[in-house]
Length: 148
Image 1 (cartoon, rainbow, N blue to C red):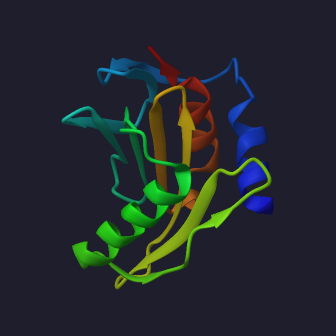
Image 2 (image 1 turned 90 degrees about the vertical axis):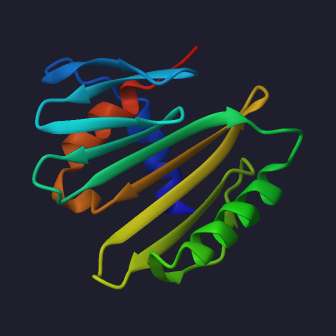
């Protein structure tokens, strides 16, 4: 998927002028949270919300339990559907590397893009909501994620 490839390229960019509020530890990973955003640690999942609530980044890294990327993608999509938060969810699609992504929309019209991969024995799930409201902040934070 073109968006997945573009996002992967963005993740590789290191922006030296980033204004970070500070490195925050979420157990299996750390993230430099940008000023103007607030991070909440919910059982090792980072939920990072722009202070005006116009955008959100969710990062989950946990043991994949031997599941494949396809199995995990389907399981997450199923859980998102059950949550009732999203009114529209596209089917997960694999890119050339076998990583999965899908789009979701809330009843309020907030657009999210989810990406899932496996690194070592852990899955990495990213959910980016309303990226258009803070694209530079997303780029900075995504580029700062460090697995332990």
